[in-house]
Structures are given as structure tokens and as C-alpha cells.
Length: 617
Image (cartoon, rainbow, N blue to C red; front, side, top):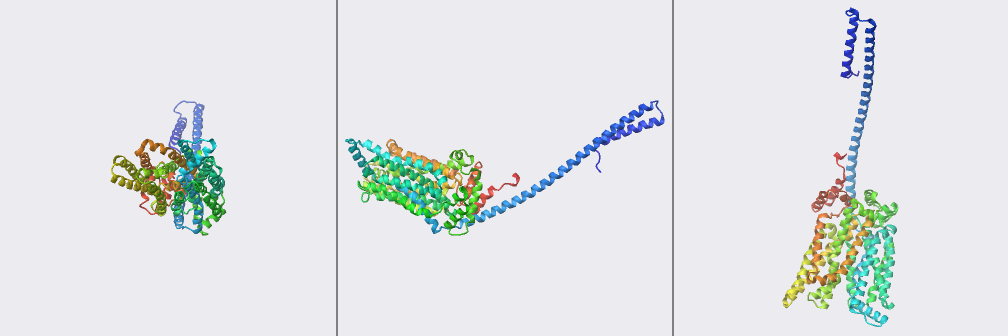
């Protein structure tokens, strides 16, 4: 039975007592009240009692309904609790499964066909390196050609200043084309694919090389300008598409080392252009058009080799949703039918970035989650170009001669720079996945900062102690060693890491747009350094490298504070770092632990960080 509320019990008791009293009065006849009046009072109190009882029944019904609702809520809470426990168990199983999957990914090796695909792709970066350095050696020959053309056209000699300006146009228009090509890279990559974009880009390479090679036959330096612009667009597209393609086909454990192959191809191209450009080979008035026209070789070779290679599996699966084609591509690249781990890893990346798939540049810039990796990618590109390395590439011969070396010795020292770049880039390949991108970049920037100071010191020694022959000899030695060491540390870090880490910081959706912005910034900085360095050298004289030293210090601090380690991390795990972007302690903790815990445990730490806390559930 359900008991009445205390207030209602009291009311009923009072009314019952009143009723009993009235009945007693009637029986005793103590008071001379009219019977009808007394009965009316009794009837009124009975009505009130009836209303109270009805009210009590209504309240009892409400209490019953409340109790049923509470019971239902308790059942719901119990059900939610059970679901939370099931979710926790599922997350634990998922973490364990991801951990095992990543361990299997880390066991993948370099196959013959993967090597072939990477070789075919990096011909685009070799093209970039070759055309960056090829214009420097035949400078005098090209200027003589421009003088001859001008005199034949206008019947008068052109001034030396005007010739220098025309030559600077031939040099700088390459970077302008590179900006256009780099900015278009994301659009081309999404529309035609990574492989398709590279194949189409070779048409530009062939056209540009033919225009440059036929410059002397056509007796037109405008053709040289146009050819340099077209080959610049070609190289700009290569710098966007090649790192993207390689990062997407490379296994997780080899992504760093294979990404370094980009810079290796650039340095090989630079070295080849320096060697072929000496006077004994093609650095002559007759040979320089052939030297420029040889840019057709990488384009034709890539057109022959690349069609055999598959399209990027990530592009096929995530962008085009062609799972079977992606599986076929992976089977060929991995030389195995066991490709489920790669497919799952790509699916995880797709889920992580599904909300931002096919993101535009404007959306990329405005996205709070992606803004931090975009800033890091841009600053990493600036750390490559504003480090002063292009000043060394473009004006190394002049730097060496101003330090006291003979003209012939300076030219061979310049070739030595190219050879050291190749050797050190080769040496950095195994270090990339062993030491880590962030650590190597810090070493590279730090070493460049130190030796940029020594280059400045060598200039000052020449000015203040130039009258002492022994000091000149010692200063020449210091200048050469400092410059070569500067190049060594560039090859270790800033030479290859910015291209690779920019592709690693983004998942499939925003990667093309991010690469376009980063490559555009790289080419713009390249152009500004090439145009501004002569004026800066004239204004600052012996202190020319001090601005670069300041930039290197700033970039070192930024890398130490902001750049995460991406070694042995999946794209999904890297994206998770920036989901926690507001929690800087998370990023700093991961960076600090990288050198002290095994890669597998580091991966588990990253996945565990994504798990929701029980309290939040």
C-alpha cells in the first residue's frame, strides 16, 4: 500500500475529529443548534474530505509515474554504462590492432619495383637541380651571344649594364616560372593524379629544352627567356608533384630515407650541370646551347620510364575511391599480396581527414587545425631558401676568388661543393629514419649558423690583414673549409627535410593545396635571394652573410619550439598531433620522448592520446 503524505494525513485527522465532535453534540443535545444547520456543516466537511481524498489519489498517481520514470532512467544509465564499457574495450582492441598493424608496416622493405618507381619519379627533381645550376657556368658566353644579337639587330653595341640586366632576366625568369608551376601543382595533382601530372609536365620540359637549345640557331635571346620560363614552370611542378608522389608510395619505415632521394636528385643535377659547364666540355661559345638543351634528357627519360609505374595508391583510394586499383598498385610496389595493413592505414587517414577532403587553399589557410602545420611547412621552406645556400650556389666562384683563390682553383672548388652535396645527401639517407627529421634539421641549421659566422670572419680577415701573405693563405683555407662545411650541414638538414616534411604534415585531402603554397613560398624566396643578393653584397660587403646568420638562428629556435618529429609516424598520427595543437605540452612531451622510447611505443603513445578519457564520457 501507498501511504498518504503527512500533510494530507493531518488534514483528514482534523476533519474527522471535527465531524465526530458534531455528531456527539447532536447526540447529547448540549447545545440548541438546529439539526439542519449541523447537518449542512457535516455535509460541507464531508465534501472537503472527499476533495482531499481525490487530491491524495492524484498525488499518489503522480508519485507512481515519477517512480516509473526514475526506474526507466536508471535502466538507461545502466545501459549507457554497459555501452561505455564496450566502447572502452573496443578502443583498447583498436589500439592493439593499430599497434600490430604499424609494426607490420615498419617491417616493409625496399622492393625492386619500388626502387624503379622512385628512380623514374626523381628524374623531375634532377631536372630541377640541373636547370638551377646550368645557367651559371656559361654566363660570359651567353652575354657575348646577347651582345652579338643586339649588334646585328640595331647596328650598335649594347652597354655592359644592359647585358647584365638581360642575363639577370634569363636567370630570374626561371624562378618566376617555378612560382607559377609550384602554385599550380595542387590543381594538377588533384585533376590528373600524381603520376599523370608528372607525365604531362614532361611536355613542358621538352618544349622548354628545345627552345633553349635552339636559341643560337634562331639568333634570339627572347627565345632563351621563353625557354627558361617554360622550363621553370616544369621544374616548379616537379618540386610539388615528385615529393608528393614519393611520400605516398613509400613504406612508413622508409619514407624519410626515400624522401631524401628528392634532394639527392637535385644535388646530382647541380653537379652534372657544373661539370658539363666547364670550358673543357660545354662551357664554350659553341657548346652552351647544347648545355641548356640537354634538359630534354630527363624529360624524355621520365616519359619512357614512368608509364610502367602505378599511380599513387593513396590518390586512387582516397581521392578517386578506386580500392581495387589501389590494391593492384600496392601489390606491385610491395611485391606482395599482403597489402591490408597499407589499405587500413589509408582508410584511417581518410577517416581522420574526411571532413576536409579536397580542401581548397582558402579553406586550408582558414582551418584552425591545419593552420599550424601550414605555418610549419612554410617556415621550413623559408629555412631552406633564406639560409644563404643559394648565395653560395650562385656566387661561390666569386666568393672563393674574393677570398684569395685563383680563378681556376675557385671553379674546381665550386665543383667540389656540388660533389660534397651529393655525398652528404647520400650519407643522410640512413640517418633520416634513424635520427629523425627534426633532429637532423636542428643539426643542419646549427652547423650552418656557426660556419656562416666563420665565412664572415674570413672576409674580415682579408680586409684587416690583407697585407700579410701568411694571413691571406690561412684565410683562403678558412674560407674554403667554412663554405664547404656550410654546404655539408645544408645537405644534412635543410637541403632535403623541408620538401619531405611538408608532404608528411598533411593527410590526403589538404596535401596538394599545402604543397602548392609551400612550393610557391620556396620559389618566391629563391627569386628574392637571387635578385637581392648582389645588391646586398654591394651594401654589406664583408658582412654579407650576417643576415643569413640571423635567419638561421630564428629558424633554429622555431624548429626547436614548434616542429614535431614525424619519424615512423603514420599520417593519421601526425594529424593527431595538431588536433592537440592547443595543448603544447603534448607536442613538447612527444618531442622530448622521441629519443628515449622505441618507435613502436612512441606510436602507441600517440594512439593512446587519441583515446577519450573516462571522465569525458
